[in-house]
Amino acid sequence: MHLYPLFILSFLSLFVLAFQQPFHYSIPRAFQNEEFRVLSHASYEKHKIRVKRTTQELCDGEIAKGFSGYLDINDDKHLFFWWFNSRSQPSIDPVVMWLNGGPGCSSLGTGMLMELGPCRVNSDLKTTYNPYAWNSNASIFFLDQPVGVGFSYSESNDTINNTESAADDVYAFLKIWISEMREFEGNDFHMAGESYAGHYLPIMAQEVYDRGGINLKSVIIGNGGFSHLDQYPAYWDVTCTNITGIGPIYDKKTCQHMELGLSECTRLLQACEEYKNKVICDAAIGFCEKLLAEPYNKTGLNPYDMSKKCFGGDGGCYQIGIDIAKFLNQESIRKALGVEEFIGQFNGCTDSVTAAFTKHGDEYKPTPPYISYLLDHGVNVLIYAGTYDWICNYIGNERWTLNFEWSGKYGFRAQRLREWTVDGNVAGLTRKYKGLTYVEVSGAGHMVPYDKPKENLQMLNRWLANEEM
Ligand SMILES: *[C@@H]1O[C@H](CO)[C@@H](O)[C@H](O)[C@H]1NC(C)=O
Ligand SMILES: *[C@@H]1O[C@H](CO)[C@@H](O)[C@H](O)[C@H]1NC(C)=O
Ligand SMILES: *[C@@H]1O[C@H](CO)[C@@H](O)[C@H](O)[C@H]1NC(C)=O
Ligand SMILES: *[C@@H]1O[C@H](CO)[C@@H](O)[C@H](O)[C@H]1NC(C)=O
Ligand SMILES: *[C@@H]1O[C@H](CO)[C@@H](O)[C@H](O)[C@H]1NC(C)=O
Image (tube, rainbow, N blue to C red; front, side):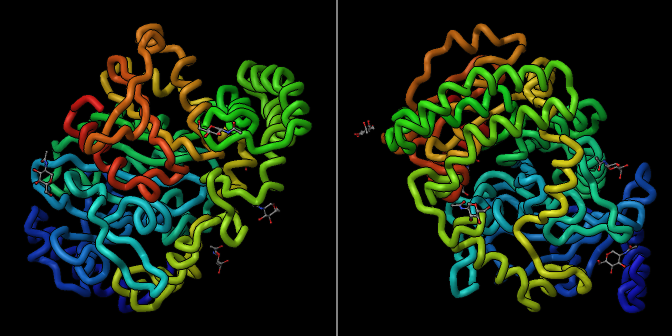
């Protein structure tokens, strides 16, 4: 453990304090601004949560109450989070956990400060109130996981390389946080995320459901990656046809070449699923990636939004991504959030974590079977997708929702897509059967809450309130 004398002193005294004054919803009043409080749980002796009240000037500006801090696991792993109370009725509103993907990308860096958090970062490195934040009618927290991502760290430099191990730590976090924040215990709980969260969340949610003690109601995933077999071939549809309304993107020659290779790509991906062998999967992905994905890079288009050029071309493609990293690297901000001093520069995504997951072959395990398990156990699932995203496009998402095995498979396939509207305007198409809802958001890219904030919040609120789209 990094031993910082001052930190240890205050840590111990707060620990004692925490036992003397049970932690209830009065937290805000109990907080001194510069102070960490420590939460613990009898069945998780080696885990603690240090929380710090974040000032309203920092982000939200007015109503919601925020807390940031760390979950300390076994004195080794430390997961950073930022929590915001619902702007409406925190005591009864649901609680939503948000995860960005990667694997290896920060939920704070993208989800919170660019997409759906209570504020957005501007180019002057100040923040602006977000009227369409997801905490309008729900409390929400953004978790940087696994260790090594964002402000989360491991003292032994342990690198998590698969979703199952990451799920263990996320479950520990939920158990402690939800049971200590009595105000929220028993409130509906929803696990939400984007992109590689199509991998994380089905596995994590099954873990949460099986281990119990948390009132898990649904899983919400935007432009997720679930199934290579369904999703790789869809690159052809969105770049070689005009199904999106902004295609085709490639020339005829490139598309003919792609079309000829589609069957081979599919055959290899089937073998990958069947044999669950990393060598076979590496070969399949190598082939499909070269055939279907590589040509996109030459277009100079944004892989998260086919209607735009990639800004800066550094993989992030958005100016705001650069501003957010600058914002989070300011000394004053890091201090206000309680970020450990020895943590280096904030990066939106951590390459070493991505590399560890890739080396392990984590992405080769299709996650629709977990969705099936959740649906069959009464946990509802909302799959949404912006129609301009390339990387985890809606065609691939629609396809896996139609193809995977679950008790409602044929009922779901029998539903026609219908329009859904916001303020009388068509926002996209949707299909629902039993616990599964699929929603397209027209004209949005990968980061739907960034591109279509109003429509996205309406979608969320209808879902949380158990209403039809
Ligand atoms: C959502 O929040 C707004 C204000 O933040 C409130 O007026 C409205 O009643 C809330 N809706 C529900 C369903 O709680
Ligand atoms: C972990 O990595 C940091 C930065 O590279 C290094 O300073 C530290 O000594 C490492 N710790 C262990 C236990 O290896
Ligand atoms: C693609 O579809 C859009 C919307 O339907 C249409 O306006 C456009 O002309 C089409 N482009 C091509 C090349 O056909
Ligand atoms: C294309 O790939 C190169 C090399 O990996 C990268 O530097 C560049 O940013 C990429 N361009 C786009 C538009 O993604
Ligand atoms: C994944 O992590 C585990 C535990 O740290 C390690 O034993 C294993 O070798 C790693 N796998 C790969 C492929 O790196």
